[in-house]
Image 1 (cartoon, rainbow, N blue to C red):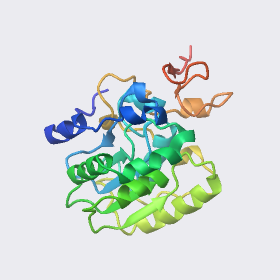
Image 2 (tube, rainbow, N blue to C red):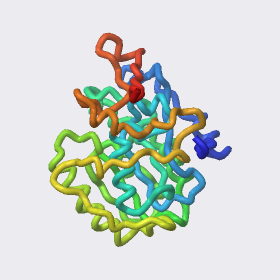
Image 3 (cartoon, rainbow, N blue to C red):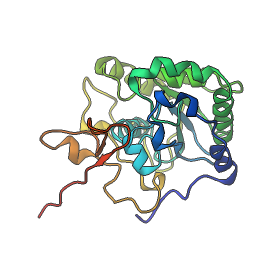
Length: 259
């Protein structure tokens, strides 16, 4: 990997280190794995701020968010806007959330110190270059709605990339892309004229995670799970929580070498 993410600037790193304790709410999260904070640009150069829900098991391996199947769908979304680097991706919750406890966790986003910490994060990573905000899912919309000093840019609320209602997801992502193309300026050398979403997800709707978004030392195939999507049986992520010990074990699968 010749390019890689060197990590957050000092002010952002200090803010990450000041994350409020989730210990009293640990039963709502895969708490023992710790937080995962971001992916993308943290220097206020982002044209798009995207907020999702929480990191998954693949994100824990990379220490970056939105790098698994959902993240590669989000990267495809950004690619349709002509973006390959001018974005910053964060989550409503820095800890991985138990899906069955989501409704119990949601009120935390409206209470201090969690709300104040999120607001400060949004302030730190955005600046005059920002052209739009995209919220993926309910938790993201709630977190954004509590941002006291949200900038005056268009906001697009769409389903989370792992939504089980694929038809609604595609319909709303398709509409958002059409509108965002009038708002967001493509990155240099990039185009926003690739095909929009159809009636089902295809491999063309996924984009591999760019190397500059990932820390040094990951294998070159990390962040591109098309090998799993093409496998039999298909699996969309290279990292999973086994049913025998989902709280404290991850299983990471590498692609087999073609001999």
